Amino acid sequence: MRQLIIIFCLLAFVFGAGDVLAFGGSGCAEGSCRDCHSLDKSEAEELLKKYVDRVNSVDYAEVPGLWVAEVEKNGRNYPLYIDFSKSYIIAGSVVRAGSGENITRKLYKKFNRVDISKIPIDDALVLGNPGGKTKVIVFTDPKCPYCKKMHDEMKKVVANSPDVVFYIKLYPLKMHPQAYGISKSIICSKSMRMLEDSFNNRPVPEPACETSVVDNTLKLVESLGINSTPTMVLPGGTVVSGYKTAEKILEVIRKEKVAISSQK
Image 1: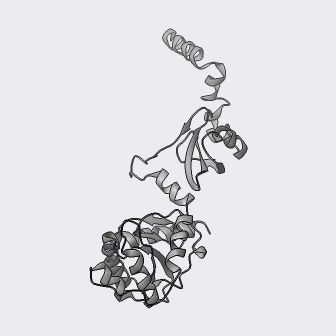
Image 2: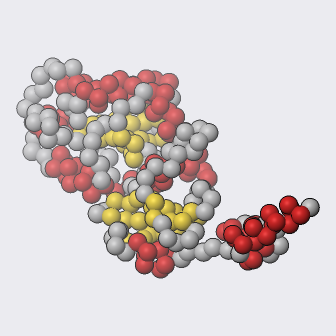
Image 3: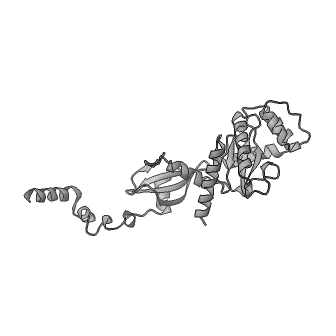
């Protein structure tokens, strides 16, 4: 009994009387720690003003004891974490231990969704059923080997999922000097065959018209923060970069639909 009293006294000395009460009487442990801690947007702006251009929003993070702020820097949005003491700013990946899901990456995609209404598709090549309800915009380079690989996977998707339709926008990268003129030729003829000829290193004729579509697309991708091919823009505005198999394409589309439904 005497040993228990000594231990309790040591705890009281270490934590302080107020903190001891928090473990069972009237402190945070009695309810949720969120009831004891708050951070509004103006406070977050003051804490982060040295590091970011602006703070868009603040909310509780999935990780207990942290807030997550959506911040803007150089035209892009990022998640930054702030601890409940307001003494630490945490940047970098937060990964869920059980599943390995990267929470920070998920937030980054959420914060950088694009407004698909700003992407014109009247100049796009259509792959799949034009009446398909699930519209995916794909930025592709006619000389990009990974774009060729994903083009073949997209064909598998539309063959098995008639609800999905891809709108292909030509985005020639500077690393492929021939791609600019080839993109103009494809757009002038609106020819899927020409795109596939280019993918397979077959000759493509010179442009049959004068068009500003390619230059407009180059300006558009810069404003959207897209800088690589292939890049998909899903129906909810989520940007997904890099080569994906047919199975992975359908998986990200499914997740996007779930996310859209949860927001309604």
